[in-house]
Picture 1: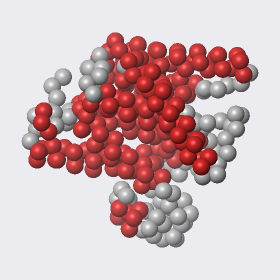
Picture 2: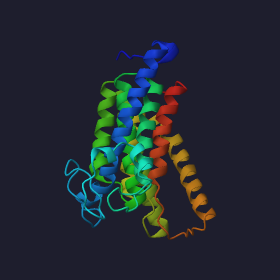
Picture 3: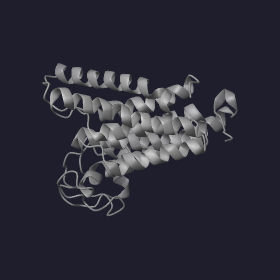
Length: 274
């Protein structure tokens, strides 16, 4: 598929700046929407208790403390949070730091995708993959679930992307999806046999299948290793802040896998592996 490339591979500096700026702006807006998905999704899908505050499309955002509708001036990604000093303009209730963080990461995903793949369909596919992983990572952090409502469509979209060779060929996508799922299911089954309890959930297996479907089977070993290192680093950072971890305490592996999956797809492109 023809690609419009960035920088030295085709576009002028002005065009490159335009595409990167446009990608960053769109990514910030997508990040704002992902905050809605992260909060409302698990409640709509019955994974956790609580008021979903509507569905993913409506109503528009409002403060959960005072129920006041937030005007558009309060929904500008990152800038509104800074201008309001992290508090609701109407009642001064604190706004979670997660909101500007997800918005910033949404923009970063878009920028990285365009920088790696150029301004074209492959960049759009990579960005959509990254945004889905971003939502999954924060949902897992907050609820301990990796919802099928995101992972299963992500697997299908990844395999479909292979038919158009957006990132890797169809055969590699298909093998990646199957290998990713079976690898974690076998590890989970072995852990259950030896320890008598679940270690890796089916959500992790479906997530790795989705990553394999987008990046191909070749990146799976690097994804698992990198994801494990990120997770261990997070545990170490928590321990340094006074947190405690025990062998029986569940640990969210999803965020580490999500970060590793996106890094490996983008890195694979930069280093001409994909």
